[in-house]
Image (tube, rainbow over all chains, first blue to last red):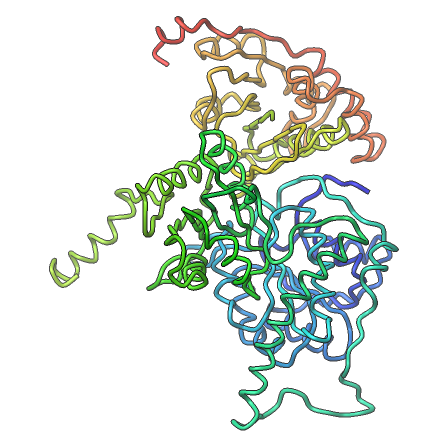
Length: 403
Length: 197
């Protein structure tokens, strides 16, 4: 069945098809449509699922943890401040190795209050132990939420998975999406089977006090699970293609990289916009390709090293920033290349939903290719009088030199 | 690829218009993308929405700065709509009466008008005093762009709304389709230069 739907509704269909049994969520723009649609499926279309309307995101994650610990397939969706409010429990879910899937619709963090697209929310939760997968099309949202349960519930992984996609450009945009049949998805995704569960008949505790002689070992096991997840993500994408029919790459997806000499690296819809830019650049005689990072954690360091090591130019697009360092993705790509190959050019752009058209990506990439741009640039930044007035005000307040 | 931008006031249905046209485009076998600019979804405030259709999959996710068609659902938005970006041959479609044409002839674009407000009011299609001008525009845009036909629009309306409302909407769309008229041709290049564009 093909629908013209929002990215949010595509996620909701995936939850229904994955036969999720518990959904707990608190509404936040731009995610709200996901859980609204799930609740409509339950109310009007006979979808058998326990929907827990909690009073906060902290509680949403607590209920997810409880459900997963009881051996039940659980889902939530959030964005931005909602994700920030869950932060403590994100560690908890990953730390006690609970399979579950959450959609995070990437949105900027306040202040100033901003509901638009930005990757700072999920990238700030980078080191919680969650697997993070980033989508770029509506079809990929649906397919990745279903795949995420297979990855999360794989015995060699047993980690929560966050499925990320861009606010508005994906969440609220209507595009075509193919909804697979339930029986097809059932053939791909078996019921959730866990090796342990909370059961009042057999009381046990899990995740309580742990002394230094054991703590480090639990962290190492998470580290190892992320290593194992790399192969599981690849295998899951292939099996999904064989059974359901769609494929969006494994840890990365590449466009025009076969004969490329210059590469743009990005996540989410910026990578699609870069794909159009690469076509433009090819028309102008520059053999340019795009590497879209689909699995941000685990990070595709082997793939990136192989794809980028021989490039003449590497441009990394970031929609988030590590204050005091630079573009988050750019720093990681640099770390992966370890000084070999080209020195990546970092473009930090599109924060808080600012539009990043392909024309700008093409123009700045061409500048990098021609050696006119190196290091780092904020190409969409447009400081004006209004932006500078507060800085001057501070200087006046503190007396010139001291500011 | 064909790109359209819609300018309306909150409550006129600019967002629904782009969505329904996308669904009709899907039925015509095209790849479609419809999206609003979010932020000012208040009744009466300016609202923008966008629509792309193509024979190939659509990879662009940015906003539309050089649209093939611009739909202006309220004449008060004319200047804002044009300042958002156009091409030399962008076609404008206005919600305007024959008398209001005179207010628009200074514009250097090929232009159409449809009296969507009157069509909506004649058929009693209003919500809280705001005429639903988006429905006549379904037909007007279909006629001017040729991207979708009335059969596809009828199917979409019948699938989306209960029977009474679907048939009423279809009538409004038909009236929009038949009554939209071109009132200005593309001006000659020389004329454009002379007018300072």
